[in-house]
Length: 162
Image (cartoon, rainbow, N blue to C red; front, side, top):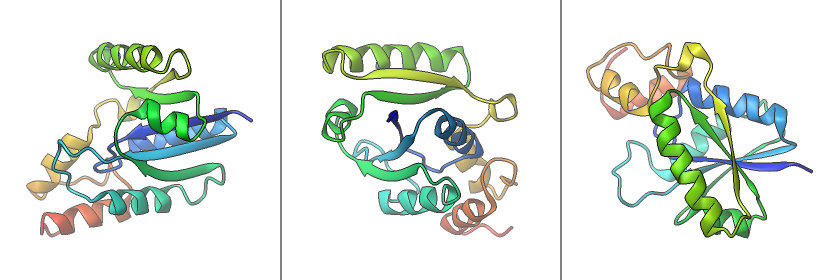
């Protein structure tokens, strides 16, 4: 059985993330989407909220599981007996960062964790969680960036009317 992990902060989950999840779920028998609890950042949504959002967004994908983790990805992957990480790439700048991360993870895991890159679909190449939050914070339209139920939750966080 081919199993993989798609780790990320998903704060918030975007249509770009969902695109990668759907495509990766067609490649792997089981895809674990796991929310990183990064104590260095101040997220818009709690880990629990992000997990619940991802569960709702992926409920139609039977081979997708949603979880969360803290600390190093290699430790979490080893604990779950996962050997493939999925990462999405939007632009060359993503590749430089993600390549370095993939190489470090492979080194630290003693070759036990490989990374598979999926390039984002063109219609989502501009999307980032940061830009979605910025647009929403000013009451802008994020309907083309996130699922409707996610947009509503984001607007509620910013007390914005839409």
